Length: 402
Image: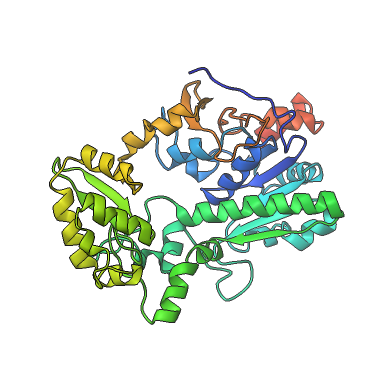
C-alpha cells in the first residue's frame, strides 16, 4: 500500500489556519478532523517533552498509539510559553490564525491572557475554542478531569459491564465526545463568521459532552424510577438483543428490533410459531421483563449449531447478527478493505503505518493523510515564515525558548 500525501489545496478547509495548545485526546482529536479537511494545524508543544500523549506507550515503531492516531497532517512547533520570547511568537501565530484551540489545565488559559475575552480584544477575527473538564465556570471549573473520571461522574460506568461488576468503556469515550463537539462547534463558528461576519467563541466540556450521550438512560431512570441494569453483552432495554454461544464455542450477537422480526425469528429460526403470541414475549417490554426465559430458549437453539450456520440462517430471515470480533479481526474486516478505507501515514523515524480515512466522505475530495510530526519538526520553518532569520532562531534555541 503506497503512502498517500494529499495537498490541502482544494479541500474544504484549505486556507484556514488553526493554532492549538493541546494535550492528550480531546483537543488533538478535534484538530485532526480539521487537518483531515485541509486546515493548517500548528501544534504548539513544550520543548523537551511535548504533548504528554507522545509517551503514553511506545507500541507503534517506538511511537505512542494515541499520538499516531490523533496527530497526522499537523505541524509541530516547540515554544516555552513561560518565556517572554515564546509568548511573543505565540502572539504572532495567533495574529495570523483563524482558530485557536486549547485544553490547558483549569484556569491556565485565563492566567496567560488566552481566555476568550482577552483574545477577542487582541484578535477580533480569531475563533477561540476551549475544551475543559467541567466548563470554565460553575462549581467545578477548577477541577481536573480525565476520561475515566468523567465516565464515572456521568454514571456511564454504572451502566457498563456485567451484573456482577461495572466496567469502563474500552475507548476514551468522554474525550472523543468532547473532541467531536469541539470539531462541529468550530465548523459552525467558521460558517457563522463567513456568512454573518460575527465571531463566536466555542466552549466544550468533557462532562457535558458525555452527559448528552447519557440522555437516554437518564430519561429511562427519571421516568421509570430505576436505571437500566448492567447486562454485559445484552441490551439493557431491548430483548432479544445480545450474545449467545454456538456449538463451536463462538459467540453470536443477534438483535430483534420489531414485531415483524420477532415473528420471523420464532417461525423460521426457533421453529416455534406459538411463541409469537405468547404473552410473555408478545411485546418488546414483555420480552425484556421475561428476558431470562427468552434467553434460555435462544441459548438452547443456538448451542445446537455452529456459529457460521447460525449467522447464515439469521441472514436468510433478515435478523441482524454479528460475530463478536476481537481487535485483530476488526483490523482485517472486509468492509474496511473492500471500501478502500486504509491509507499509509508516515510517522517520526520514517516508518509508515496504516490509518483509516475519516468516516465522513465528501464527494470530490480526498482527505489529507500527511505525516505525524516529530516533536518540534516544523519550528524553524514556522519561525522563518514569521520573519525570524537563522541567527535569531539559533539564539532563541540557545535561550531555551524553543
